[in-house]
Image (tube, rainbow, N blue to C red; front, side, top):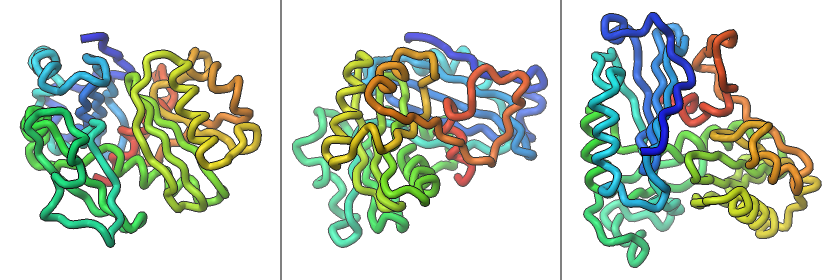
Length: 282
């Protein structure tokens, strides 16, 4: 387990208040993040635990994560509602015309490491496609324990909807979302999704390489096309500085307005919590 990042915790939140609140969470292979909000959308808790390097299997880190869940009271409080999504690299976007719901394993043939997988899919009408995912069975099992009423949905779905909505006025948009040593990169042209992929990185130079590779692939000039960033990045971070050396304009994403952060006591800006803020529609 690497570290626990406590971003915001309201002293009012306890087991007695939990039934009047909703828990939102992203259960990833390398980190878990949660947000608690009351009925007015006021955020009472945001926390992140980073517990593994990106390329480790979930089975290798499950014990660490279960230890976190056992030790942290917030995971065990009786919230009125619980909504969650998964994060892992085993996803693919399939055009509607090619999608076959009875053949989900075929989309990952020869691509997955040996393990037991649970397959799921979600329709993305705005993109005329389906997102198909292969979830390691231990991760699916733990997700069902934490969010017993939730479907097996992937974080990328809500993130892609946000990217599409926020890219409406631009000819091209390049969007970078950062988790714990994992980058999600997307390219849109007037709301049309041209590219989406996930990359694991170790150094800032790795991240720069993958970002500039996307610019090059679509013949876009980093001096002319802005980069929108969100997630685990701040203006004074090394990741931001190395990107800024090559991309003339970097914009921080403006999160959806469904949740309200108490600005006076918020140590991190809203773009850092984008993946959680995107869960308002679950």
